[in-house]
Image (cartoon, rainbow, N blue to C red):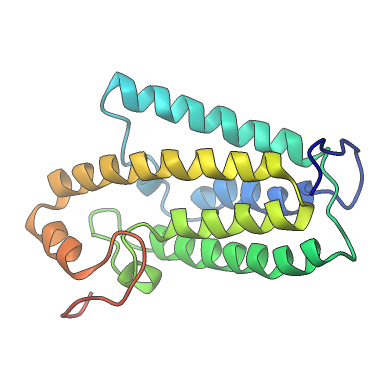
Amino acid sequence: MSLIPVFKIGLWNAWIFMLYSILALFILPLLFNKERFKAKEPYSKTEKKYWSIWVIIYFLTILYSFFVPLQLGTIWFYIGLPICLLGLILYTIVSLNFVTTPFDELVTKGLYRYSRHPIYLSLFLFFTGVSIASASWIFILFTVITMILCRIFSISEEEFCLERYGDSYRRYMIRTPRWIGIPKSGEN
C-alpha cells in the first residue's frame, strides 16, 4: 500500500466488484418486493444530511473504483479477494432474506437471526475486501466513513422498526445482537 495511490483505468480494477454492488442495489428491488425498499425515509434534517453524505461517498467509491487497479498476484489481492467474496455472498443472502419477507412482517429469518443489521456487516466485509485487494488507503477511508454512517443509520432504523412493529421488534432486539452473535433465547 503506497501513500500516493495509483490512478489507472483498466480491466482489472476494483470496478469489477463494485459493479455487483450496484446491480444488487438496483436490480433486487425490481425483482422482488419494491415496497420494502421504500419503507423508511430519514426523519430529521440531520439524518437527511447523513444520507446525502452516504450517497456521495458511495458514488465517489464507485467512480474511484474505475481508477484503482486490483493488486493481482500480491498478498494484498489474495487476502482481500476472499473477504470481498464473502461480503458479496452475505450481501446477496441478506438482500434475498429482506426482499422475500412480506412487507408487513418483521424480517427475522436467515442472517437476520444473528444480526439486526446484517446488510451493513456484509457491506463492511465487501468494502474491506476491496480495500485490501486493491491495497488502497482511500478505499479504506471510504469504508470507515461508510461504517460510521451505517452505525448512525442503524439507530434510526431501529427507532423506525420500534414504531412500526412495536413489541415484536422489542422482543427481536432482546434476542438478536445489533451487529453479530448468537440469538439469546427463543426462535427468531
